[in-house]
Image 1 (cartoon, rainbow, N blue to C red):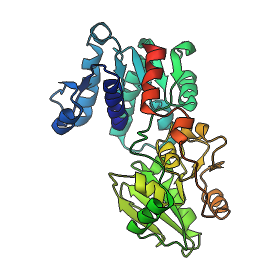
Image 2: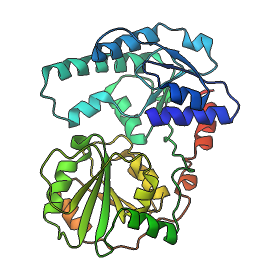
Image 3: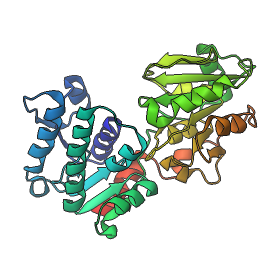
Image 4: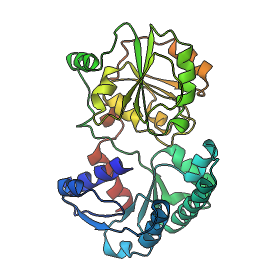
Length: 332
């Protein structure tokens, strides 16, 4: 959501709009880079309590009166539009909670989420999957929910030609005798890493390799799995691999899907991934579930050389300028 916020700031500014951001945490260098106005709201409380006090204070602001268009990316109720990249009560259904404090946290999140959906005039759902979940869990007027897919930065994520791709593969030390898969995640449990690692145990290490970008791997894994750490520039990594794989239990959208496709690399995803809605007619593999046997069967049928035609973002209206125009058309 932080990346999405920056996309909105830059997109509106490019169209000549003045942008003000209300935030709890502020990076001075980022403020200087974007040049937008920032109003900081930082309650002096422990971190988890601070989040909910921040939401409470935002709810008390006259944002609808102060701005032509107020867009909320946290669970706030004082804006014209609430951006929903995922329904919290749906997330809880797919992730086992064991800590008591986490359960209390979920109650507060659900309270603010329910209040937001009930109060705001418009809801922007980042996929049709998210829109259906909102209407399934909350008794609200369906006409105020609009599906608008999140944009990707088509300048940062672009198609790599054969020479550039070969350079990217060499930089990562990729063995051309193997099929290389990329898994990008900071939430391994929900995104199905455990099942994916179990699948790679059954795959020939001389033929298949998995690269993991993001959070460290805290569970045992076979030798054909390599952790890349956090990657500040994912575009060449997407371009270098044969496939990006996202076997999520639950994924409201999954930005890695259009990012990878934009860079030319097809994806392997479960049908539970919201971005799978964009894959009709595109080279990709949809898994019925994320069980290890299902993953193994699918990967054994794949081969290298499959590429996505340039211009994925344009074909599906995922450019930032198009996204800003849609927001103004629907909510302005």
